[in-house]
Image (cartoon, rainbow, N blue to C red):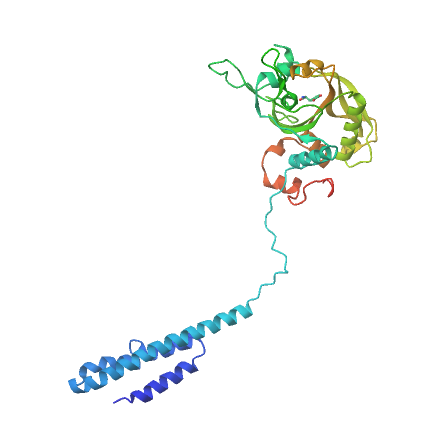
Length: 371
Ligand code: DAH
């Protein structure tokens, strides 16, 4: 007959000697596994006489139960010790830089847009917005485009299907100039009623950045592009204010102390007089240099707001004057960052964006600088 007390002592010693969960598992298998010592005793009970079984049975079962509990306790203790050891060994150095990952970047057009907004914000301009889908009144009529005038066609307009009830044909705005109207618009639908402003009351100083659309696609035109419009309305505003504002802006945008600009007479229906602003440049050697050379580069369109536009917006041209300007943001971004071709700007190619994109955590601001 096996000495149960001795067996229990041996197994208990073996359990305490086991210093890993793997070694403990060996002890468990040796005792309680299929052919383990305790299992063999349990199996042997069938061969005992009923009297012997009555005595041995509770003893062997008791041994098995105590061993099972002791093994579980020891296992829990060893697992806790192993976890502590692993935690102590596996330290993470939080001061190490994170491994490089593919990062998103800010598109040059959006970077230029943010720069333009930040420069004008510094000069006290607010940002105004209007819808991409515009009505004929705001896109053309209120901006003094005569009805059926070729200027409407000149813009290669995308027309939407006419409204079945009113026949009204909306357009994808061909420029950001309709935001001028939305900003200063006042109405008095009922004769004698006071004027109601749907925009804001003058004085006004806003820029309107946004998407614009024209049916045009070649090396220098895309059907969707970006513009920033500007509008200043106050009393006694003249071309001198326009000139200072735009020269200051262009110098800041190109990060120069000043620019040599010329204002070349031009025609826009919504301004009188109208001009295009050019800056002196040198393009020899395939490189663009500003303020030197004999070439002039067109930067933007501008002028004094036409009295008809002020009237259409409900302002008295004898009381209020102003200037307006509009510029192509994608083109300004190309000039500033040396981007040679317009079309890839809209291809959403991550390789192109990785090359020309800007960090999202270095947004341009007056304090932190531009690009
Ligand atoms: N809307 C014009 C265009 O898309 C740009 C422009 C020119 C806007 C002169 C103005 C302006 O406000 O005064 O070509």
